[in-house]
Image 1 (cartoon, one colour):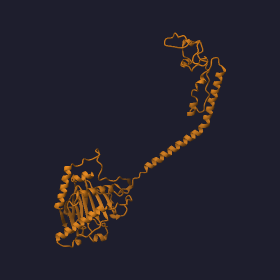
Image 2: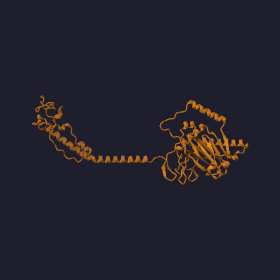
Image 3: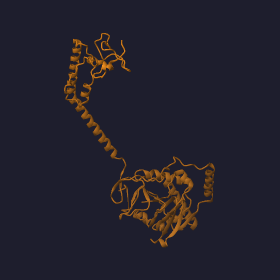
Length: 420
């Protein structure tokens, strides 16, 4: 083999064959890339560099389809290999390749309508599936609720113990702090709770609910408040809203109708039942109050001053730091319950509240008493129809132990029990 004189090029001379040992087939050997047409090399200007014959491409009606694009791709290398001198073997290979090419095109023509139909059907199925998923996502399982103005809305439950943001947990009190709290609790029990008879049928039991009882009340109300029939923003018929969140147990009280109902009309929710533990605390509070009345008057006729009551209704109100409630009377129970003077039992948990009460709806003439976390207030008998309300909430007065155990949000939780 002779080397070309051109610098940087290494090609065989014109008289030499390359690729196949018999010298007939080009373009399949090691130097196939040198056999391209129009290479511009001066060594090949006066000689044929290839016996390839250009065949014009016939028009294909499927040139835009994926199958047609595949049919126009370069055929196997044996199709391009043409022996020098135009021998019969090369011609037959070219003819067979051409027949294969048109056979593939015809097959693509026959298969394309079916594939296009299948592709269209698949797209329709995917579109319908996406529409179905979208509809399912839009149909939220949240209960439909109606606001006080009659407009429908999706309302999330109010959480009285929201998770702390930024930190996944709150530091627990040290062992020293826990022991101090236990000593204070034991001291409170040994010294006895402060119990006052404010007026006939009206008793205040200071520090009556233990910290453990308060924790249980908060946690129970929190769970009930997030479920069906839980906390919501109540309002009056004229569109005014109460400055608190409310939840009813046993029966629902509607501020607009000023009446009780078995199913909450705003969202058709069934009020949760009163927990048995709550009823036990109410029973014990009435018993202790009647014992206090008997001890003060040295008489055993405490039942006439403070009748017995088995609660089947509980209204739970949460007051924020700016919460308040104007002077009003609790007079929407049955006539029998009101005439007998069946008492209302009120639990206070959380921040302190300034409680007003009197015989008239006059703030200036009302008396005031401070209700702290753990206090129980009872009014029945002759005091059953007193006007009462909440003048203000004193912030940052919730017991620290209660906050640490429940993450109770700033505010006051008030439960009022009564018999319908």
